[in-house]
Amino acid sequence: MNLGDVWQNEGRCGEVSFRAFMEVVVRRNFLLVVPVAVLVLAACGSSNGGGSTTASSAASTPSASTDPCAASSLATVTSGTLTVGTDKPAYPPYFVDDTPSNGKGFESAVAYAVAEKLGFTKDQVTWSVVPFNNSYAPGKKNFDFDINQISITPERAAVVDFSDGYYTVNQAVVALNSSKIAGAKTLADLQGAKLGAQVGTTSLLYIQNDIKPSAQPSVYNDTVGAEAALKSGQIDGLVVDLPTAYYITAAELDNSKIVGQFPAVDGPEAEQFGMLFQKGNPLVACVNKALADLTSSGQLKQIQDQWLAGVDAPYFAS
Amino acid sequence: MSALTSDVGSPYVDPERRDLMRRKARRDALVASVSLIACVVVAVVLIARSPGWPTVQDLFFNGEAFKKSFPEVLSAFWLNVRIFLVAEPCILILALIVALTRGSTAPILFPLRAVATLYTDIFRGIPTILLVLLLGFGVPALNSDFITNEPLVWGTVALILSYGAYVSEVFRAGIESVHPSQRAAARSLGLSATQTSRYVVLPQAIRRVIPPLLNDFISLQKDTALVSVIGPIEALRQAQIDSSFTFNFTPYVVAACLFIALTVPMTRFADYLNRRAADQRGHG
Image (cartoon, rainbow over all chains, first blue to last red; front, side):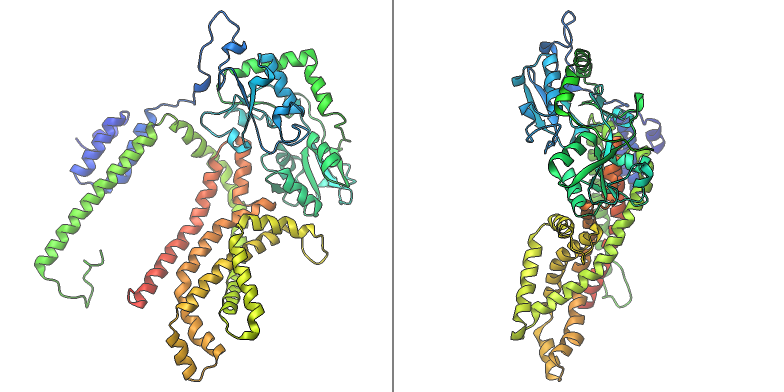
């Protein structure tokens, strides 16, 4: 029994641990503590294989004869209830009064419409507070899906599952009327400006990849901080998605305007908001079916017209 | 282990006792090693055996993500270092002034003493992040033409004010720990109050409080991350940005490694100074 045996048997965790113990203690090879610990870790780590997280919460198999998307056979976190997650505070025009359960606001309305298609009544929908960073954290999720203006990207889709897009979003620039970029008409006009965005948003990515200003952008935890910076002149313009820009200029900031929205992108490269699910959650298929129904019946467009009316702005020339 | 080293001038130790000490040392080493190995094995088995370990490894210790976000987080880390280098001397100066003001006895300086006391009380009571937000957003909101709006400036000022309060108390403790006989002897030699402070009390006081001061500076190095809430992109913020795009937490581990790389040399240096100070004082 020697270290060579330990090396060869690296596939068996318990045996490796035992032999490691004997090797190091009985033969008093104290110098081997660290390499042996690494071997044990490799042996025991690899014995689990490359398994992915199992959607253990949604693992129940529906009976073969019934529709897998019927409300009674859906495997939700709490049976009989649909748990929807969103951040707090929940901003307009996506939610109203920071109360997702009132059904007002674009995303709240979409969530309730999807729930209705899945067979849940309004009372059977509960909302839970899920800060953005927590929504993609590993481990079992305590919501069925999260609706929080999350853009679908391939990198993110490797870690979580997204529904189909429910809104095609475009980015826009908000500035005070007195700002030096208030009259900007092209992307080049924005390059000399100090811009700001909220962390974790594709707005920030847009600044870095498309506008490429000479000054580093300022990044804020939320739009509150960003608006404060805009008001005091610390930033010349704020990049946010168009509905948020519309709400900021209409209701929150005086003497501000939407300078313009960025050139629209069509097809698969268009940025879309999607609902976030745990990886492997079978609920995604049912929600996608519900979204398809809502789109074809025109109900989704109706919700959009109701809550995002008048959301428009001139386009920047690129 | 220093009891075993035989440097020149150490006391004579009976050979039999020396053997006994050596055997005990070896036994202690064996028990310590066994205990260490057992703990390591138990920890490794527990962690590696949990069903989520591959996921945790992929999301927190992902080599690909580490390599990808390292350059960006490193260049953002430079901002932390700059904030730290600027704030440190300002904190020292402010804290010394406040400590000396509080220690003064002249009755005419009473308003200054009151202000200094109020300053330490208030700024030790307000959480640093709150101070950063208040100054970073509040002062520029005044829209004054004479005051700069730069968030970096006001964030650093907030750090200086907050840490100045703590460090001034450290200085005050150091000054008060110098034995009153030192001051009495200095005065009786004809030195004025200011000269006593400058040549007798302060050198001793500062030498005594260097270890706790280094402690506060190590803490400051980490708190430079708070400046990110008012806009500037520093290491932690850059890690957050990278993480939110890939939904991977490895960039945070990158930032943590960088912070550790900065603070560990300082902690070892602080330990060294502590040991040296203890040696000079004759181990209490």
